[in-house]
Image 1: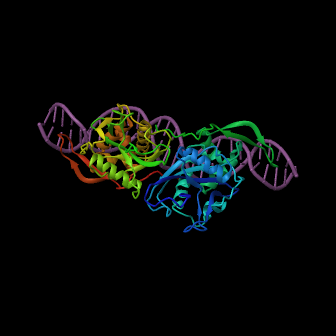
Image 2: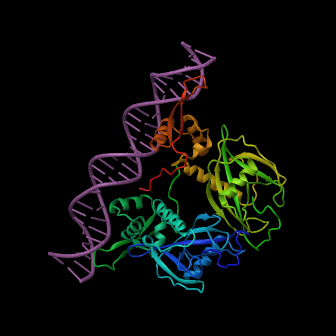
Length: 228
Length: 228
DNA sequence: CCAAAAGTGTTATGACTACACCCATGA
DNA sequence: TCATGGGTGTAGTCATAACACTTTTGG
């Protein structure tokens, strides 16, 4: 979302917005948070949550504010993705948008429908609706980044409960990467990278052998990659 | 460099700039292009070349324009690095700056000293002068990206002559990474990644066995990395 | 004792490291 | 023929991929 007020003059000053690619995991799919627009020419089109930055507001603060407004929640982690600055990306005026990747831990956020929007909803990444602006490219960039960071960071831990079984973690990887992984190799790799650490607790909620619970090794989404 | 005109009001509208981290290779060192500022409080401080974007100008166009103005040359390749948006990063006003990484092929560019600046000069990355704004962080991010991309792209080919010997290429890697590499392993890796292709020509300019000349396998700085 | 998911080890293959000598040329 | 840099192969180590059975629990 950009240029929320239509007073923005085309080509006078470029204004700055943030857009958020908010991901969360469903049982079987990766979901993206989208809002439905009211204004022409994007009536009924969907867009990533976003908004113009305030004059005394950092980009990060703007991301927090936008997410608070739209979802009522403060994300634990987010990172900058890319900046989109094509001249005609927004028909309402010249808007440069800094996109952020926001992995969320659950889908049960309280969603606020403001006057500006028709609706706000989760969509499976594989079945996106018609998207406004260049938001398909933005979401695509978000997915690419998220997938890449699975390989060498604990970013997936931001999308599942704080303590989790290795099977939970593997499922998260499988859903995001959209492919099956080998259980033994997955565990070896996760352990070798030291992305998680074991707790003394077990998940006894299921009628089978209890699984050991793990937590992220660091609260940071750390780069385990070594540039040798 | 941001907010070149001092009429920018603090906290009224954020304005958008691009800054360029321009790298080139000297015989033995990696060099960064910097301009010396005149305005307080950064008198005599140095900064990465940059400028505000025009209202009808894309970010990429702005990069090209800035480089043309400052160096007289159009870079063959550049890529977006990161966007810096802290509220107080620029004492002249609220400026959000999109930083770009620009690898250049040689140091012999024609340099224009405009009225706004004291001087424009190459500095070895290891001996940077006092830098204005948050430009130390920007340059540091540029170096990090450049080094990372050596591992899986042909970005180094943008910093040496179009055809080059494998020894030339290895030297570029060694200077940028600031470490010695093994000749045989280097060649094996470059060949395995198919970053370059052989020509039929040899460098006969030296009084020893002629070295075969290579060119970049692609004019794109392609990601050879496979996300398996 | 059965169903269900947890947990675990080995082998083969490909990548990376370390390392030393012969080759082709011009002077 | 000498000085200079060009060019090449092998052995050891480590990461990755493929693959199946035993364990623990609740019902």
